Image 1 (tube, rainbow, N blue to C red):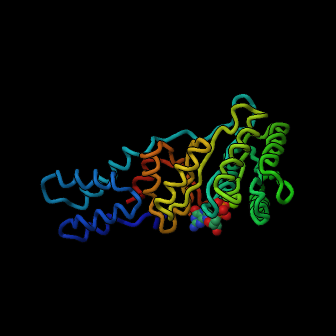
Image 2 (image 1 turned 180 degrees about the vertical axis):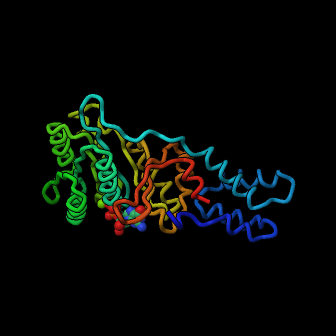
Image 3 (image 1 turned 120 degrees about the vertical axis):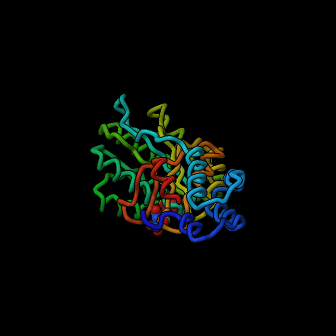
Length: 283
Ligand SMILES: Nc1nc2c(ncn2[C@@H]2O[C@H](COP(=O)(O)OP(=O)(O)O)[C@@H](O)[C@H]2O)c(=O)[nH]1
Ligand SMILES: [Mg+2]
């Protein structure tokens, strides 16, 4: 995960003393938000002595760790034998389809059976994209006709998963359906449809956020969380200019925990969130 985050450490280590304005700008531009940035700066200033690069890194890491969740166990097959249903949501282009395929592979590699539902029926290309991934990765897929009702695709996939005793169902959804309001309505309908065959489904709703979009991601999390309760995040594009601070901010402000991380376009560029590793790589 090289180049994961801009190296704050390298920046401060080459300095005789800390430039507070520069440090503040760096923390804010890492999407840590004003509140957290201020808390870090205040604590460093309160040290009342010359602040070293180690002080900056240690204090920042501690604040990040405090605001991130401890490690959550990976999703496991349901003891009742019904499929564990994962609903993948988010706005267009954040990486839902890619992450759905990556998650499918991740589960498959752990020996679990997986089926994917191509519920972004709004764009034909989206279905084809997921199909290509599934072919390449050897994953099963259920799709509908172009412009089919996304809920019916999810229902059929769920039915098939139940009949076949498939352990995981991953539903890849659309990021835009005419308007954001329609999208939220559609997601509500998908949830109700999934609950018809298993009142506990979906068992996990994951919002995909693009780490390079900063505070937009926070706003998306707020909006989706209101319409459809989120259990966690998939934070993508951490290999790009995204610094990952947005995951800290979203968890700090909304209590939604990062669960998986996307670090590239390749299917293996995907891992479970782990607090210690994450905090070490953020700096
Ligand atoms: N660099 C990088 N690109 C990613 C990552 N995840 C997704 N992408 C790319 O982002 C673009 C949009 O992804 P897609 O899955 O189609 O997004 P969707 O519209 O939310 O389904 C594609 O070009 C993906 O290859 C990631 O972790 N890193
Ligand atoms: Mg998609």
